[in-house]
Length: 112
Length: 115
Image 1 (cartoon, rainbow over the protein chains, first blue to last red):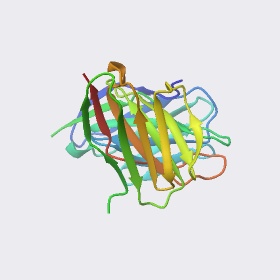
Image 2 (cartoon, rainbow over the protein chains, first blue to last red):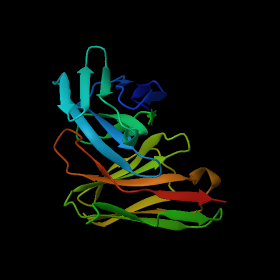
Image 3 (cartoon, one colour):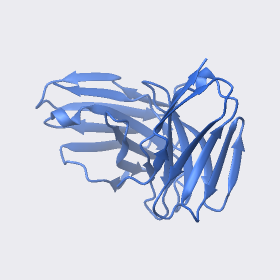
Image 4 (cartoon, chains in turn yellow, cyan):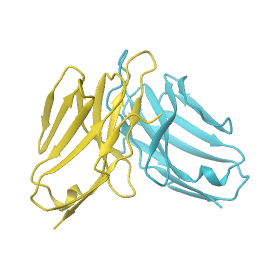
C-alpha cells in the first residue's frame, strides 16, 4: 500500500524562487528519502533523513522531518530551470525485509 | 562506468508473448530490486534479492519471475504478457544494512509496451 503522500501534486515557480514540497506518511519509519526523476530517466537519490533527525541540508536542499506529525518537507532554494523534474518521497521501513515505499510524486516546473 | 544498467531500454511486444529484462550493477551492492512505474508515475516495488536470495515478493502475478544469477545481476522474466503490464520497469540496487533501507541507485528504466 502507498505510504507517502506528496503535496502539492504539481508546482510551477519562477527561476530563483524557492520550492517547498511536502510529504506525509502513515506508519513508523526508519528513514525518509527524497528522489528526483527527470523526464524519461531513472530516479536519483537526493537526500536521506533518519527518524531521529529533524533537519538536514545538502547544497540548495533542505529537508525537515516531523515524526510526531508524520510529515517531511523538501525545500529547494534559488531554483533553476534544471530543477524541473518529478520529486518523490520514499519512506524506509524497519525490520528484516525493510523496503522503500514511494509516494505519487510532485511535478516541479521552474520557468526560466 | 554506468552504475546500474538495464536492457533493453524500450520493449514493444504483442499480448501473450514472453519477454525478459536484464539488469546489472557495478557498485558492489548486495541487494537488487525491481520496481514498476505506471502511467501516473506511481512507483511500486515488485521484488528484492539480497545475495541472490529473494527477500521481498510483493503481490505480483506469478507470470513475473525474477532471477538473480549472482549479486551483480537481477533479471525479470514475464510470461504471457497482458495489456496491463505496460509500464516502465526500474531496477535498483543498494547495500543492505541490517534493519533499515538505505539509499537506492536506480537504472534508467525499461519502457514496456504491450499491444
